[in-house]
Image (cartoon, rainbow, N blue to C red; front, side, top):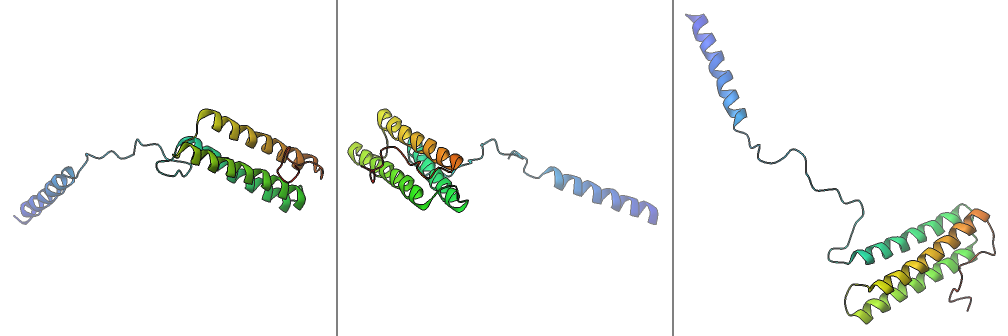
Length: 142
């Protein structure tokens, strides 16, 4: 009789545990289908703005690394930073002109080209270690 009672208790326990596990909420998927965001973006800002700002930040970091690695002189870094400053000021002027936080395609292309030119100049100066390389048409040089 004790064996039957023990067996019944064990089966009852397994049955209750099985029912409890089957009632868990399986409606939510185990993994999210939303892609992970790799770069922080300001909510409500136009993607063009995010791209320009990210490129400005990246160039500032590259300049700092160049000085730290002694591949750029402080004068070169200053000239490159001046060019970035002029791009930032042009960006602000364009946004103010447009009256909203968006760039027109021609404004975006102009800023992008200026950053491309500055990027190439930074790369050239760091690669050559040439203390005469500086961005073309910097405000300080004019």
